[in-house]
Image (tube, rainbow, N blue to C red; front, top):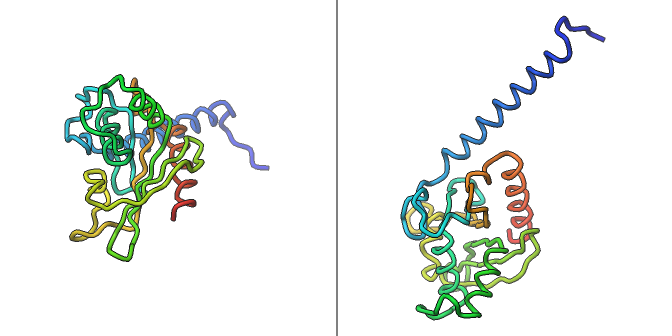
Length: 194
C-alpha cells in the first residue's frame, strides 16, 4: 500500500474542489448550447410572459432551449388536439388538456412514409410510459421541427424531446442531477421510438 504525505482530509478537499469545478464547467457548457429565445414565438427566454416551463433538446444534442408555456400549449392544443382557436381560457376541455400537457413529455420524430415524410408525435408520462402516438404531416408541426432541419429541406435522423420544468428556475434542468434524470428519460424514450 502506498502512503501519501498529504492527510486524507486534504486529499478529500482536493477531490471535492475538482468535482465542483467539473460540475460547474459541465453546467456552463450545457447552458452555452441553449438557445436564448423561444422556438415557438421568437421572444427572448429572459422576457417570457407566461413563464418558461418547457425544456427541449434534440436526440442528437445539436439543439436545445426553453419554450414558454403559452406558446407550447397553444401549439399542442391547435395542432395536436385540434381545439379551435379562440376557445375561452376557462373552458373545461382546454383546462383538462393543459393540465395533461404540464404532466407529459413529448417526442416529435420524423419518419419515412409512402408519400414522403411524416412526423410521429409521442406523448409520455414523466416516467417514460407511452400515453399516445399519432403521425402528422410536417407542415402541421412547424416551428418545432425547425430544430431538426438537416441539409437542404430534409429532416435529420433525430427526434425533438420536450419536457416540462419548474418556472422559478428553468436553468435548474441543466444542473448535474436534474440533467442526468432528463437524459435518462430521453434515452428511455429513444429506446421506445427509434
